[in-house]
Image (tube, rainbow, N blue to C red; front, side, top):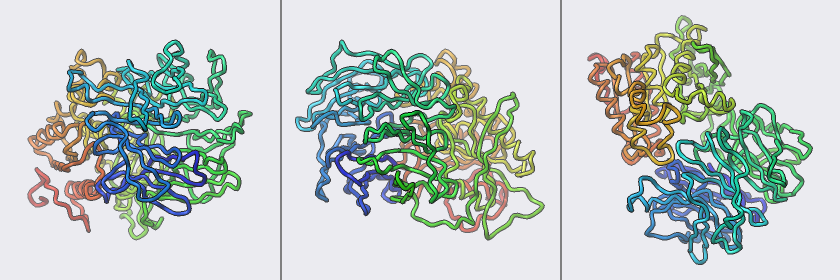
Length: 632
């Protein structure tokens, strides 16, 4: 979900939502006392810049500007009158993608453009630039080029553009730079003599610059180990830390359009911000006032936006027993109201497992973290003499994190008798840069070890059955699951959703954004190919002595299906139970409702056959090879 406001429309908020029942279409919606779906049939507000997208739309003066998924063109849709059709403002026959746009002045947009046209001209990768678009004349001008990546171009009232840039092999959480330059009045170029770097560099990740109402430049960086909020001083030689405690405001920029802080439009100097797991208001004095929302158990916040009059705040919030919601917070009274829920179904809390924060010592003397979900179903109780099986869930990324927000994919298992451990292994975000960087050159080692040690810790505590330990994950999480099943003997079974099994193949054949990611996670390629092969499960599949299920999208460009097929063939040859399901038309992650449901049912069904228990109500057409004959 992306959340936006139009500075010219009071008491209106806009957001995009993915609708699995409409084949994963992204629809822009509006609320002003009632729900209105704005994006017409045949359109989907989703950009493929960096493949992961984000920043697909913004709103300005009763117009929505959005990237359309099918053709990746930018469209303008007037919204004063309902039923207005979107009009394209970018060329039809150019393989260009757009993201992270904002209005500079009347009719002129600044945004990130990713040019795939150059691939037909012999370039080895797409070309990213910052461009201006004149929506009336439908002209485009390159403002900044030369770096491999750009994000967050934002122009101040006085015509100064800020942007973030970085180069291979860095990701946006590694080494990035914040630049400034004056933009010409017609928006067709920058004044070259005014270009200057003002923050970031080696060992510093700077992200998400914004201009305050009084034209002060704010941004987040981690030079003190934590992603904290800073303001550039007027002389541009110094900066002021606005909130220095050892907690993080930022998060990894896998997508565009994140908003962990928002400046009050009233010029009173207030800044609404996320600090760790807290929602807070930072006062001009430096005082941090924690905001408690009493209406629900919110523990996670994001997508912060002030209303144009500064009286309200919009945000996405969720909690251990609360689905993610778009809410409106009255900053005067502290009362909140729900605008949109991510799930319409009402779930009796008697079926919900409440996560418990846990930590454990790893075998090499480090510390790992997670959330433990005990089995919970108000209608059933497990046998007194039997411990529950455990499912270890591994988040993707790997530079990412899990949170305690209600997730039906976890509750699916806990309501059916499984315990779940959601792991924040070394390399996860939210624990500072040192913890995040612990995964550098150690991918497939410390993360796998932390997951194994977490499972063994819960077994040693008597919480779970040590003989029925399972593990699953998607993408990079799938790689950890495959590695744990291949190189360790702690798990009896596991599931990989579009997981990496051949790191070399990932290094050789993936999209531009992650094309050098493995160099920081493993080492330079191809110089360290021996290390890549050493850590790739597919080359050691003969060592996998566990049952394995795999689910994969046929059009996945990030982890091509060939990787899953290789792993399946190897495990099948080994004689252990194995299942492989390909979802036609799906990409990296499943968006169609029927496929999301099948992957969950299929995983549980697979475990029921491996551990020989009943799975009532589960009916899936999943072929499992190498089951004992009486169970097949």
